[in-house]
Length: 428
Image (cartoon, rainbow, N blue to C red; front, side, top):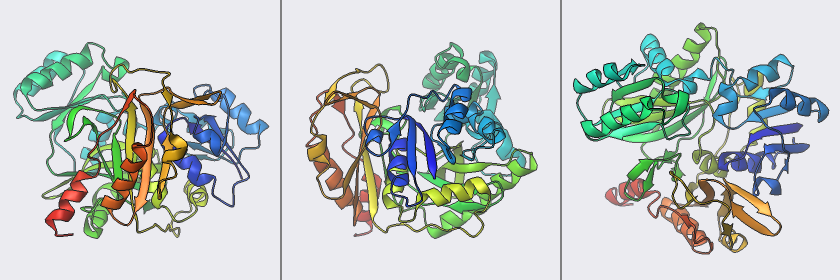
């Protein structure tokens, strides 16, 4: 099969790495890709925002499957245009992508179909939002309704912080994404990333992971797109998985089908495991980043036929196998991220770092210039490792980081701390 992968981040490098190992693959293209992806795929200068250009490329290169990595092209309807042209695509329609494209849409959807989530209010007017806030306890969560690159969510510990977040949204900090906001109850519990492949009717649960959203150690500082992740998430037990499927995922699949917008692709449920069970924080309509990096390290089965089965609507009898090992990834970001950050700085030592046993380095924001690797994004590298335990995987990842020469980068030093703490409390 000839496959076109859309995207340029760490998630796409992990997907490309996994797809490249498939015996079914004839040729893998990536648009636009990055320096790491270029090692396993042919990177092509095709702008995914130009749907006509994507369609033309697919026809000229006999593409059998398009895999859309990021959310922006999905929300813009790229999957619809590909499907209408008779090109097989892994990724939901524009209508179904509202599950990520509009937080208000998802909250109303949950209310309609009885899916457990936080209490909330939706607002397009600042005065009404502030009035609602005055009646709510803190901490409280303020979210820009639309896509904001993972930065439109504020968990406010004080009413003053919540007020500032509301004013920031309505002052244009997130552009059109902040023209409407959602204010919701702050759920308490363990946060988890839960994934399921969905073919419009059937759902196949994948393994869970735990992400680290805050930029600094100890869960301090602003939210980011994710500073690290590990899998498995020990508190996502078989019972929690069953309840998540029965109470959240399956009702969503049925509800979307009932609304005439069946979901086909991967559904990423951000969960809070509360004292009363799992509740939905938010949906994403694509693989997570950096969770995909640990999922792909643990995936034992061939990824490509799973994506094809999802697109073809034949997941009912499909299954996947996973390695028992723990996988952990640490994000190396450019100094200043998630605010203004430096660009074009050189990264050295990657080949040496990759020689640490069990380590694989996924590129998230890099470009090759001559013989040099340069940082081009905020999140730049995902230093990932497998091991028999969280401790072993973590030691390997940080050992590899110690060999990377990049003075303009930084990283959290405590990825996996919750799992380690849980293990110590259990005497493991």
